Amino acid sequence: MKILGKNLKTGNIGLEITNNEDLWYLSHIIEEKDLVSGKTERKIKIGNEENQKTTRKQVFLTIKTEKTEYEPENNSLRILGTITKGPENIPLGEHHSFNISIKDKLNIIKTNWLKYQIEKIEEATKEKRKILLVAFDREEVKYAILKNSGYKTLSEQKGDEQKKQDEKTHKNNFYQEISKQIKEYVDRLKIEKIIIASPAFWKEYLLKELPEEIKKNTISATISGVDNSSFSEILKRDELKKLLQDERTSKEIRLIEELLGAISKDKAFYGIKEAKEKIEEGAASNLIISESYIKKMKEENKYTEIDTLLKTAESLKTKITIISGKESSKKLDGLGGIGGTLRW
Image 1: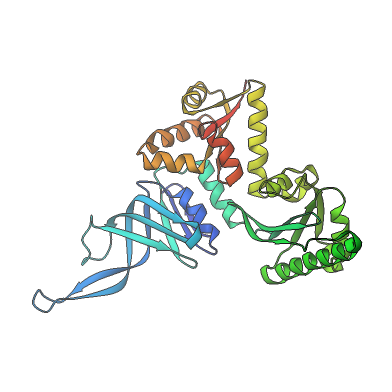
Image 2 (image 1 turned 90 degrees about the vertical axis):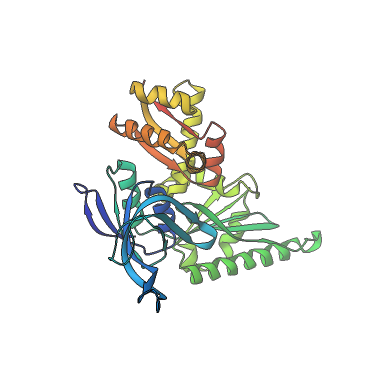
């Protein structure tokens, strides 16, 4: 994402979309009643009533947002609302939607930008390292790429059933296959760092098979096993803290672990009722909300309650974090979708 202009006095920020993850960021930033402006296509009626024709034309419009629809599987974001400003031949008050994609430019005007929203924009403008995660043992391997909105599984692979008499050959062949697949991902996806993780000493076998140019960008870690929780386990490892300290997914996992630890010590709160009480008292140090909880509140027309809570929290210097990773969101949703730690 590129910032094309920013004037917080007028509440106006201009942005250019540079990759598909920017759509995810915008889905969290744009809210009901925000004004969004940009170039878009609109059906226009041309000519008098007798010879009237309808054609599609590119125009510059401003709409007052009613809702957003983000579909990550299709890399699409729609911003729906009513027209507040446009050419003379387009009636004000009619409904319109922006279909946002890469290279689109738009202006967003808010009455009040919250600090966490500005931080999200700044986070989206940073160049991100592409990190490949590889979880494996002697018979199975899983590959994933780290994303700001979690991690995306790329593929899974199982080795041939080994026989005792050719165990060594089997091992070598399987690790050679993993090495080839890693190189393919590195070349095709422009991977900058690789994290390989396995139980016991299996990673040592793989390291022997990796080419030197890949090995120098590889970090090893230990996991308990290869299953659906392997990648979350990788991201919790202390030895990876330095590498992953700027990666959102890792931060989210650690944040949830800290919350659960604070709850066990009676130094935290969770659920909307406790969140309101602690924030209004000024006792909340951090406020954590899951993306799925926000979506649910919007669907139930209760988002005003959350919006008010966020504004109150910010005015009292409470740090706000929106959790989006699948594993982290699931844990937080189990606590009511909202929680945080206390100042005292």
